[in-house]
Image 1: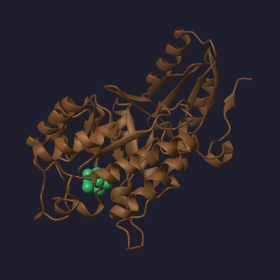
Image 2 (image 1 turned 90 degrees about the vertical axis):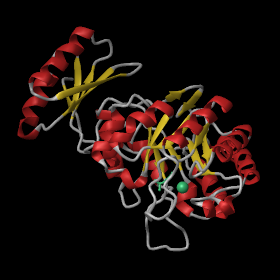
Image 3 (image 1 turned 180 degrees about the horizontal axis):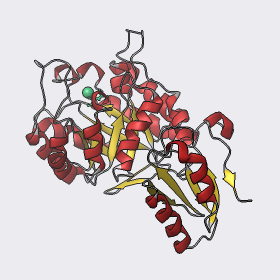
Image 4 (image 1 turned 30 degrees about the vertical axis):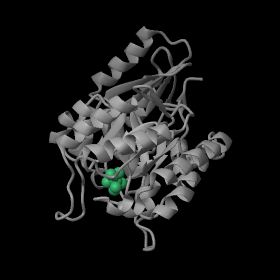
Length: 358
Ligand code: PEP
Ligand code: MN
């Protein structure tokens, strides 16, 4: 449930509500919006729900107490109506500007990464990507350069001034990856690795959470809820395609998820048409479609010589293709950047009526 404080409620009144929640063995999380404070009550409420709601509604400074039928709370739009904006170095994600994350699938060598980083930065990328610890389907394929790759990513940041993002696969790696990278990536295969989600929640770096390829939007938001409830509000969602019966493409980019997420959550959303399609020539149309659907950004794989890439060459763009794509993305973003679907009636979002004093 959410406790919506009245406009102008005092700190003392807010603290009074929070103490009451704590005394019930539950955890209060407050969102101090421009107008008012909303307090989410997190924990197992059980059968005392009705009684607790009326007790909270009677406290001074409380305007309404709203039960929320959905399981995600801190990541929900009701709790936090304003869009989350993530600031990392000079990059700003989720503020209405276009985020373009680009770089190779894997960091293969210092030269390969720096050459790619400089090319994509010159063409308008805002974040550099590159995998150092790689989650490969086969144990016999290239597994990444590990810490050596992280060092090259840090060098790419120095050269370009852009933040770098890289994947972390297990809790024990979080500290070292956070030492080198500006944004931590949790990959599709680890979306429901709860110890990892909790660990990145405590790492003090923004996290990009990719959608598991067999996960529903709700499971994805519950995974994000693990990170946010561990103390990290800076979570970016990445739609990277889900597995369907279609086999021409590697996965199926779920574009509907983009406007849907904008209604359900305040977290920024980017699309990854590289892993979704698995084919270089399909990346541009789907990247443009993602931005036209309201995504705040895209992530694409780029390689100096895609045909000799050690991973995901088939879906990696050449530098020329990336330049063309970046220019086209800006045009689409200028035209449709604020298109986030039509307003949805509250009932359609699963909201139930609040308990109000008025
Ligand atoms: C990646 O972005 O490097 C990656 C492995 O993607 P995914 O987790 O979406 O498969
Ligand atoms: Mn890849």
